[in-house]
Length: 239
Image 1 (cartoon, rainbow, N blue to C red):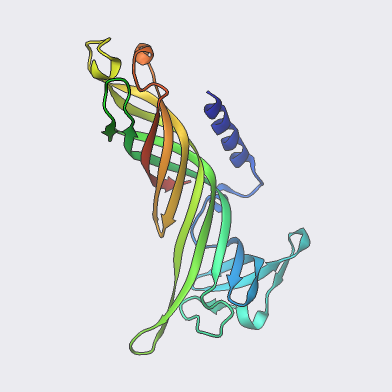
Image 2: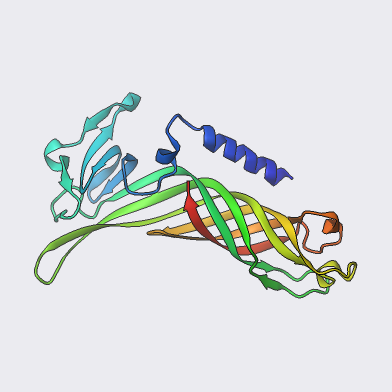
């Protein structure tokens, strides 16, 4: 039960961290917020980014969270769709570090050999509540078309890691109880563990190591109770 207590502790920390509204803390879109700006030939700088439609303003973060507009001539209402070579933002990267709360699902679970039962690969209905810490990288990419028209866009990648817990179902059969029951049914399990996610644009996929606890009187004879599994996890929605 130590991992459950740790999960609750992490949730409590994340939920109470700072006084910033949830939609600002857990949003992973390219919008207003604190970033680390990395540009070629320029020392990485902590900034506050103000995004308005297709333009932006970049503020350097001073001591005491005071803002200072960085090089007004270079950053005042920069058009995100046409960042040309020579602009300080050309091919730059905005790095955001934040907390993460996510609703996910374990697509596949690989259970190692247990007793006389060979390894299993299962795909059962389940949902997990995930919380952790993440880094997002917003890379500004610019290119010229065959008509020499400049076009810029933002490529989003990222990664995060943390703890999860949730409810799922798993078969309870004579095989998975070493023939200590004749019933066959889908048992409800409490699942928890650790996972690592990789993000590309709007897709978030990860690997998890987890443990299941069967809810009910058959938990004492279920061979997978509290046994580790490895899973493929898909992020569904961020809060």
